[in-house]
Image (cartoon, rainbow, N blue to C red; front, side):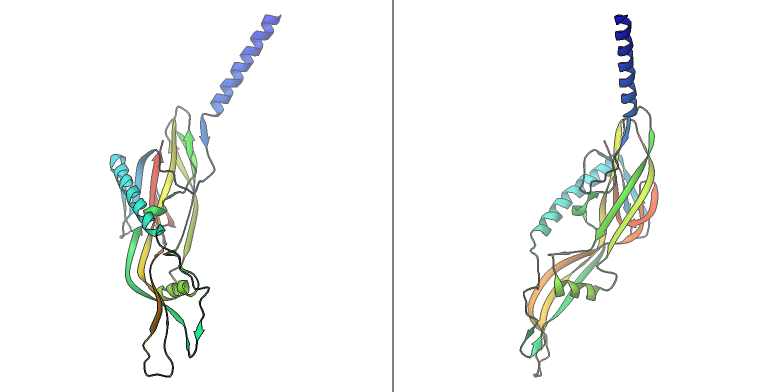
Length: 254
């Protein structure tokens, strides 16, 4: 009787373990880590062109492009981190017979600049632990705001926005659910490199003397700044074309 009972319990434990192993074969994560995971193998990159078309890279060509972009991103980040913030909180707005004014003088504007240093993960990770291809829901969540380097506040910042117009100084966001196939024993996720418009110029604090014939602005302070503005256009995310935060979407597989 004891032997029969032990055998029955053993069979039950084996069956229970088999069920647990089977239920864990296909796993997904609903969490999106907004840092960047550059690991795995890059399987596909969709790069938007200025004419509304897209260049798709796969395999070795995609990986080589991505490796080069990573090095360029490190250099870009190092240059920006060396810049010090600018603010006008402690500055007096009036002196004697004149008032301080602020302005932004643009020297150059460039469209569609890739911000490789801002790359980040924008989807959950889909993990297929089964022995067959499975379909999962990929959750996309991406957002991008305008930026100024070095960082500026107050009237300096306002002068940039007023000069560049209402289209500048935006924040765009996009959430989307996409159904994708994941190969057996593979994990898939997507990272994003924003493409933004770039403006280079000087933000200045100045005044114009009163009561004299000289009306030429007297520059009190002048700073070289670079500002980037995001875009919201048709983008390609693997086989899908959706209106989203504009940029390059990179597919990783591990």
